[in-house]
Amino acid sequence: MPIACSPRLEVMAVPGIPLLNAGDDLAALTVRALGATRPRIDLLDGDVVVVASKAVSRAEGRFVDLATVEATPAARALARDTAKDERFVELVLRESTGVSRAARDILVVRHRLGFVCANAGIDQSNARPDGAPQGSGPWVLLLPEAPDASAAALRRALGEATGSTLGVIVSDSFGRPFRLGSVGVAVGVAGLPSLWDKRGEVDLCGRQLEHTVTGLADQVAAAADLVAGQGAEGRAVAIVRGLTFEPGGGTAADLSRPADRDVYA
Amino acid sequence: MPIACSPRLEVMAVPGIPLLNAGDDLAALTVRALGATRPRIDLLDGDVVVVASKAVSRAEGRFVDLATVEATPAARALARDTAKDERFVELVLRESTGVSRAARDILVVRHRLGFVCANAGIDQSNARPDGAPQGSGPWVLLLPEAPDASAAALRRALGEATGSTLGVIVSDSFGRPFRLGSVGVAVGVAGLPSLWDKRGEVDLCGRQLEHTVTGLADQVAAAADLVAGQGAEGRAVAIVRGLTFEPGGGTAADLSRPADRDVYA
Image 1 (cartoon, helix red, strand yellow):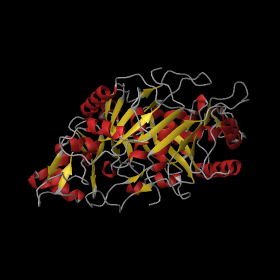
Image 2 (image 1 turned 60 degrees about the horizontal axis):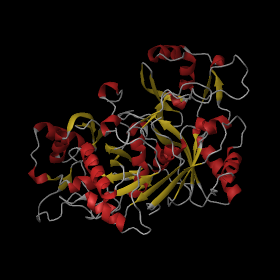
Image 3 (image 1 turned 45 degrees about the horizontal axis):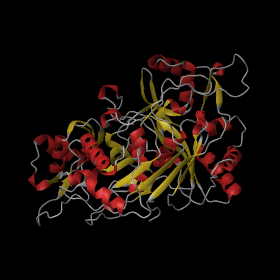
Image 4 (image 1 turned 90 degrees about the vertical axis):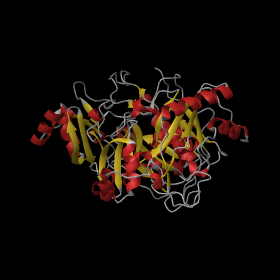
């Protein structure tokens, strides 16, 4: 069994991470913020560091000034259907491989990274870069270019700085079909399995358990969301401590249901 | 603001809850199990007790012997389409107000309680009641009759036994459109808000936050799922400590997107 349930977890926000700007070193800022915690939080082997995608995107400079975007006819038509800014819709389409649902105020797409979400995860709040020229914008913020790679780089840098073997999740907050309220999900994963597969284990009656692949990285992201809040609030980073897992393996793509296996696609 | 992000949460499984049977007193068994913990876990004001729906169902005697179920023609047809047992499908239909998607091995319905899920949440593992006559079955286990009421009763009983003002969530594990891996969700809620509404607050740039109603009770259920595992494993109860919320208010129905607002219904 690669993962054991842990009887006790701690979920800690890391205070003191500033609002990031392009080129900022998120790993260094995280290490510095941890050093200032009292009582001091040190990263330990097996800790999972959950970082808001918004913080990663800001550090990676994924800002776009909508004034620089020209909408195609397809984006203009979709903007009319959804009552959204046509330049914003143009960016959503550029970030996507297909539209899942479009209606007034609703634009759900399959992101080029494989997951299905509203607006391709493009953020319109806190999306103005530091030092943006007066009169520029409105600005929006794309998801990281390659969140699994961002997670892996952060894992490597934090591991080198602390000597600990960590998991890292780049998290976002997604709405859901059927259910109200957004929840944290993993859009980038490094150093831990994304799914926890318990199929083949037997229950107390000796019957094989079914449907027991759980969305481990998504549940960790949801737990972190309870303390981290929006990146905007200076709580861009949280630590989940106490999970038992074998290092390595997962990617966020593991969590995306392939379109041909999705009866709601 | 009714709820503040908490900078630190603890998520603790309560070991020692036995596999329950009809008529068992889940509150008393939880109090007894807590009393045996070392170091001792006492319930504190603001703790949220998350209990697996399977444990609640077993205590409420929601077992059904499929041999006693007669399938209607509609259930028989749907059983053929889904390659499922027609008596099982009959029960799913009795628990539902409509079918969302049916395909081979897939039967997603809108449960009579409002949420959309596979198989109306009916469980086929660990579903045999203690003392079932030899040769009876196969047995299945329905969701609790009224999980919000179950949560409220458990909250009252645990509150009386411990003197603490608690939240209680009855949790289940649901699959999801678009994403692989099941996650914990709240199917019963008492004593805490189900949703955390941050609309109207402003971000660091002064822009109103959008889409920031988070599924609080679902995220708490997901966090608990990380430690609680299946009820079958004797980890039917978990405690989430450190959330700040105003007592009262929520129901699981708050988390169900009404069909007329669901573009995937």
